[in-house]
View (cartoon, rainbow, N blue to C red):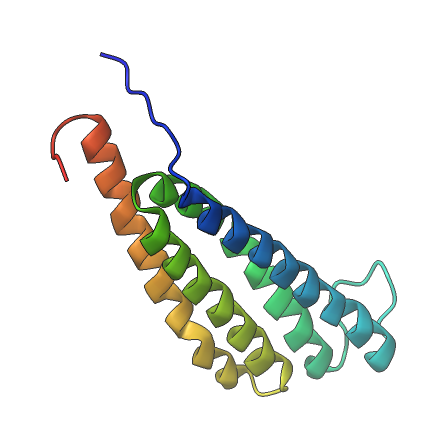
Length: 141
């Protein structure tokens, strides 16, 4: 049996949160560009002698490491529960901003202030699992 999914109008919230996440990703990357000038770290070097620069670089790199997971979960969970998914996505994106700001402070421990982002990931993961179970008609919610 084929599954046909028709997007609800509420999926627009998911689209807007994804666009917001793109701006967040660009912002974190731009912070590294500015930090390269500030701390005199020239391309192609990934890291500098000054750990303050390295904190900017790691905030960006870690964001890129989790971003594909976020995007996949955002879309799949949004197909199941678009409004809840958008809220979870917003929590994730705001958490990543707090994470980056904490890391960029020069005190790497402050990055943990953005750990609440993973509550958003967890919510999207649960919705994605429910979406899969519904498609398989194992659970009907």
